[in-house]
Length: 76
Image 1 (cartoon, rainbow, N blue to C red):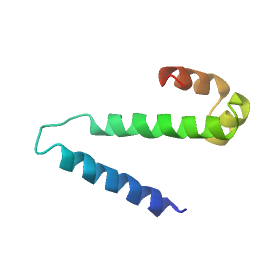
Image 2: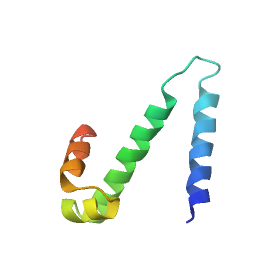
Image 3: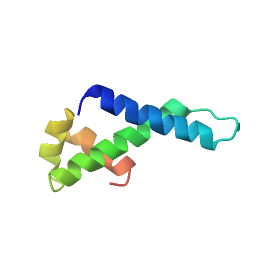
Image 4: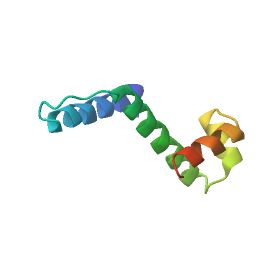
């Protein structure tokens, strides 16, 4: 998979999200998308490494304390 594939996936989901709004007003989309992408990525990596926080933090490029804080924030 390349970066363009992920970009297309995000675009497709945003198209569906806005289509489903049926013209309703919306705000805070960037924050919503950022939180959903971050939580999904962290959960995916944690699952891949059987919740080994040291390995997950290394893969994600963050320190273990940050990972622990984010995992708690997203109830992972």
